[in-house]
Image (cartoon, rainbow, N blue to C red; front, side, top):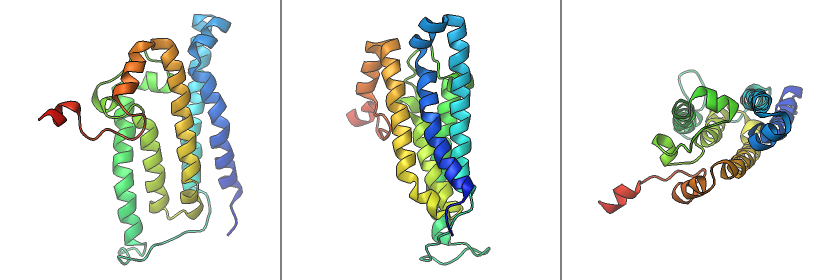
Length: 205
């Protein structure tokens, strides 16, 4: 089975939202060019379009018609799918969903949508990893690809990782401009996308 139109569209869409996201986090540029109020509105709209667009196109990768794969190692589930695929899906989906949800709730939905924060958030899940939502997106993508047995979707994992890393990198360039040494110090303490398993206090015990 060849890649479907919808799969191609989803891949192209994921790439297209990157420059939109870049624009949405350039707060100082938007504020200086359009004024603080209008710059905020433009950034918020671009942030919502790029954020929801990223999620929808990622979802498109999972559900688009494509060849299916099944690793028959542990047998099949009662409904006929691969038990190995199901186990892999659970392993990735649960932490992926947790990181995504915690990242949004601890930052706040409005801040998550508009990509604007008024302080450096370094507590909770953000004390373990600087970008829990993007890590959650990567893990969820892998888990959903196994769950739906999407062969091309799973093959797109390197692209999904690269896109998420680029988004993290761009956000951090702007956060350094906005928060200066406060954010640089946070960068030194907490890893970008591979979480810190043990806290400093744990190591001292």
